[in-house]
Image (cartoon, rainbow, N blue to C red; front, top):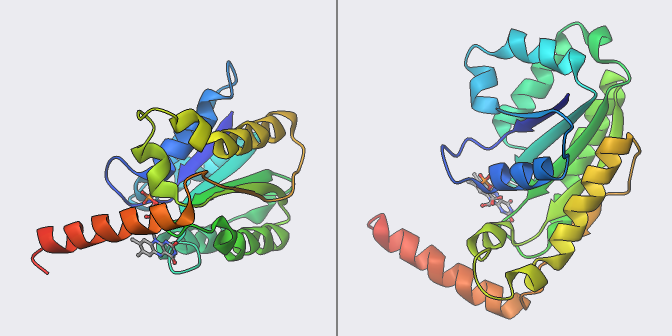
Length: 201
Ligand SMILES: Cc1cc2nc3c(=O)[nH]c(=O)nc-3n(C[C@H](O)[C@H](O)[C@H](O)COP(=O)(O)O)c2cc1C
């Protein structure tokens, strides 16, 4: 079983959930389960550690928060490092992360956190997929040309899925949207202003 963890606390329609589901679709018959971090930290920790021990691979799905992992995800990594670590030695760990900024390269710090944690845990870091302009990928999925615009992201998802299924490692892959940066910035500013207005600011 491939265990996938959604570290976003967004209750519904989250981008991390979308990328994890997209990845899961590539696994075909192979059993995979997406668990929410919220559930794990609200009384589900023991059950989670049992699943992690059994899993062939562990995929950490996390949005970039302030150039790093969300605090709740850090909390879980700390809890796991204080548990019986021998249960997880040699386990393959992969990551998938998205961010609001255009440049996916900013996710490199998050990948380093996961990689360093793996060293500490004697687990094996297998690489990560970073998605720049993450919220737009799901947002435009039904518009014409979405497939072409998201082509590199689709390539990254297939690459990561292949490595998870074969148990191999890969270099971190920084997928790019084909929307021009300027267009993305304009759209993001417009949506941000609209959200501020909606919240009375
Ligand atoms: C508290 C917080 C911090 C964030 N920090 C960053 C950041 O440092 N850089 C960035 O590009 N996006 C940042 N974002 C945007 C999220 O990474 C982005 O919206 C992502 O798609 C959220 O994924 P989700 O829908 O799965 O929660 C932040 C969002 C929140 C709520």
